Amino acid sequence: MPVWIDPEKCNGCHGSKQPPCLRMCPGDLIVKNHASNKAYLKYVNDCWDCLPCVKVCPEEAIEFHLSPQFGSKGARLIPHVHKTNDRITWETIDAAGHHETFTIRTKLMPVALDEAVEGEGQALDFAI
Image (cartoon, rainbow, N blue to C red; front, side, top):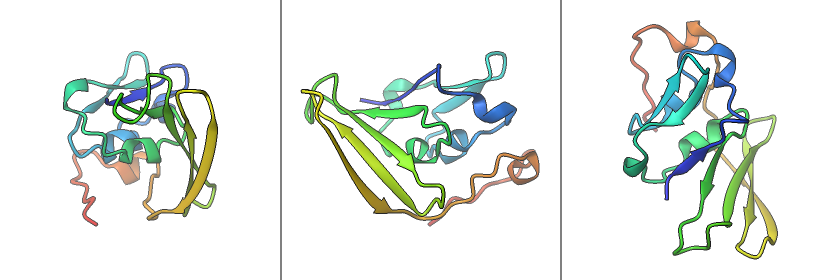
């Protein structure tokens, strides 16, 4: 089951031409509608749930909904990135509505939104 971008929460990263979710998607599956200023998953069937887009979204607008193998339609996994960007608290909600959270350390990645960082036509290297 692919990630879901909540159009109510997504603000297009305040007019950014290439928000972090677009830059982080290894399959180039997320695009931005510049008319609505919203990101969306253009190729839903090609999403393989790798989740970099979920973790990097500053508005927490991208969610991962667990597939039937792991839960029911109501089960969710939601990241909350700490202000220091070195930890993520994951909130899980199971089919019965029970909440659980756990925190992990994460790799620091620059997610600046200014065009100088994004660059027009500049090749980005996301190699680990």
